[in-house]
Length: 133
Image (cartoon, rainbow, N blue to C red):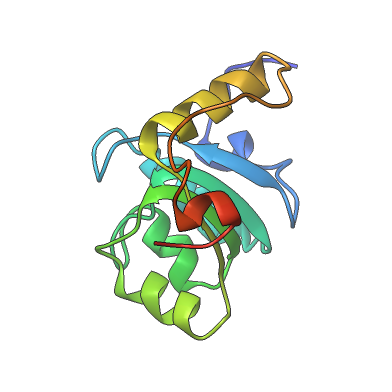
């Protein structure tokens, strides 16, 4: 399989419903805008997304959120997306908030085949019991 595709649509053609995706970028910078648009156009659903943030309404991952294509989000910051808040508060969206450094290490470790690692972040807080502060 070639790593180079002629179009964004070609690049996401094999992403199926229920896929897990790591989405790059920081805030609204460096995000894969064309690939997100191609996923929106394909209408794939039930996506599990790992990203620094969830974009804003109608931009970045906010496009997929507004279309109801994301089922679960693991992110370190979610504060500027009203549709995210609506879906989360209504129970439509599963959310795991993870400190930014821990999120980056989880992705690095997973890519290296390391199934688990220890981080002291959250020890002795409600996070260590599976809750939110």
